[in-house]
Image 1: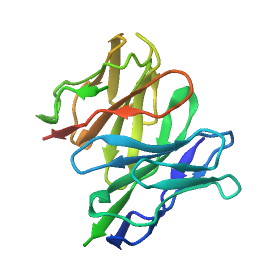
Image 2 (image 1 turned 135 degrees about the vertical axis):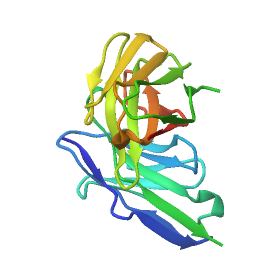
Image 3 (image 1 turned 90 degrees about the horizontal axis):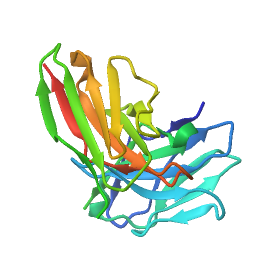
Length: 112
Length: 113
């Protein structure tokens, strides 16, 4: 069965600093990987996805994630964060019937 | 703008009541899902459906049932609400083919008293 581990429940960071949110997964088959973002009092939005091809994927707002098969990781990074990036971030791995298995989430708190 | 709409943003129900949570999508998606979200536990899959009148149990189906009579609508039913079902409920949908990711609704925060 698939599972996802997000090692950090909270990550405080100052504005304009770099950030990395860690995600490790376990799966016995080829996977698709996702990062979702949840802003306060909202549902989740798809931030970026890895399906195949280049192991580095990017979002439109400056986040990127790298699929590392040997380390079974899909860490999310941003070189310079903004206050508006404050949100909870969820990593997910695909399962059967297009189900997604989600991690427990990482709350990113960007301080001025 | 494509949407997944959940009928209620906040609900308060009494223990033992039968509760209906409704979800409608306008993207012609085949797959629809119900998750519950609890602090520190992330999202856990309750039920999903990949076609009209089809349903599959997720990881935590106990105490819940679902209905999918039309492609665009997927209902979650709490047969007899209990306090441990107090949670945020999230509906999502996707196409049946390659898993390109989900579109989520904004959630229903249910409190059972």
